[in-house]
Length: 405
Image (tube, rainbow, N blue to C red; front, top):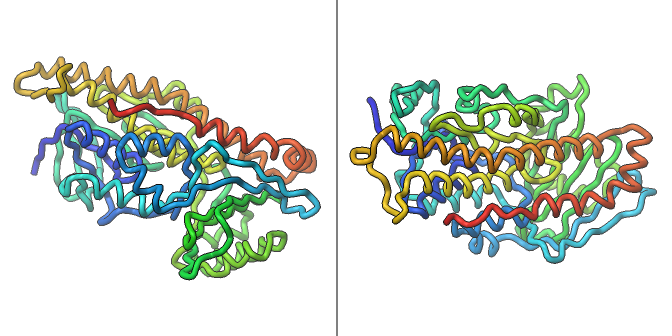
């Protein structure tokens, strides 16, 4: 069976759904392919900064999500060496919240027409077909499309087609957890972060009831069997909490086993983006397919939201006539339309290349410093770097992707 679609987006994650909703707001239909049989909710929550909320406002869902998540007033930084003083940095003047991933994806999906997302649709190959692309699915379906967008994560089929290598393992792992306090956690809205001894802990309240936490570390050989066993994961985290305040230990203690997961931290080497093809003809990538990064800046999901707004705008400018009327392939010359799409995707690539390189590189270096266990790096981190990190986080998050039009 062969189906023709104007725009096909591979992956119903943050970048894919944001792009689709942006296009929908501009009157352009897209089809989103998701390999799973439902929305995939991994990671539980994400830090969102000014840039994310500007993007969410641009696609019209910012206010509904604000009502379900507390504004974070500040972040507490501490070394796991208790002799080091705790420093608190205010977020005054900045919009910082811990956003539940499930609510974000559901809100994005619910704003789209009901036939936008096609579940259980795994892409197995891509091939040229004149000015179109033919997308082959595992069930035998073939889609022909004018625009193909890869938002299919770190193992992106579309990124591979564009010539990108697989993201590189950093040598570090992350354990993430989510705790529900039905009677309220009573810990306030502040973020808390603890670093030292090769570990980085974070505790982030989403609202009065929902709490997100994480641990990143460099595993040894004996840790290799942890990844798929939530019992061992929880025991491991508890064993590392000896220098953490008891109120934070209780957050991990009360986490249910089905709300704990582990994953390797991967990133794309920045120079691949410098020389690689973010777009090629009528194909491009966005989100983690474009810029997989480590979590130290809390910008992975935020950057995906930025991508979606910028990409929707660039595609709309290519497909809509000056008066706002969508082009019709039967009337507009196919070659001319292809050229306009190609230029639009090149503009997207230009706008996102250096932003992506900056975020990937900075995240990696911050992670290296925070989790280094060397004496000199520890001293510099605890006495100097910790004073500058909050300001860096705010600067990286103070980015405006612009309106949809």
